[in-house]
Image 1 (spheres, chains in turn blue, yellow):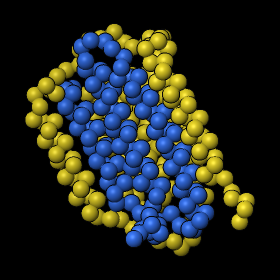
Image 2 (tube, rainbow over the protein chains, first blue to last red; image 1 turned 90 degrees about the vertical axis):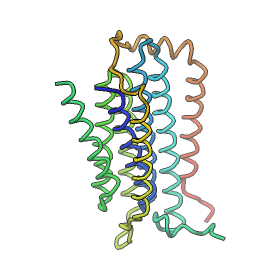
Image 3 (cartoon, rainbow over the protein chains, first blue to last red; image 1 turned 135 degrees about the vertical axis):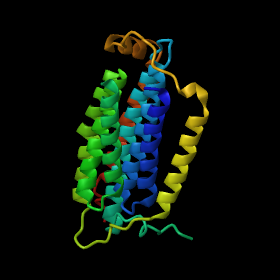
Length: 101
Length: 161
């Protein structure tokens, strides 16, 4: 199993996340797409850590920090979606165009 | 044998991620998202990073997936049209994927096999977190506290209106 196959799996996951973030109308699924892109980056960190001959735990530590930051981002994003829903009664990002010039 | 396991994990992860990205039913898509993250953490286990896989399951399946399901239930309205899908995103995602695969295939240093290394124990991760990475760890602690307070303030009812 070479490193390039792992990197292709993680880039496929990244592009599926990009597809969700760009194509979905629902705000929660844009957040889910961003989470998928972060998970793809974590797969890359772990893969490069595993295929390195010198045993340094940096890749694992960075992945743990990335998971913690992604959790904080998800909490704030979902709170924002609830606040937006309370004001505008919608979560469709096409209708949230109050700031449009 | 171990390669067959990898391909099963990868197919499960990518299939359920694709279902989460495209399924028009919101609750089904949220559950597919949970399955996709189980697949990602299984991939971490397969790669030998057991601690990260466990953290991934705790944080994503235990917290983020439940939060997403609750938010879907709290913001759901009958008869609202949320099933639209913007097809230009497919073109952009396929173009990015083609570029990434092309650059991975072009670089010769990527076709290497994993070396034999001693497994990374949780004890070693704890030692490294408490010595070399103690300031980033403190920073993440502060960030999580601030994010928790910010999420509370954002989601709180506005009593003045």
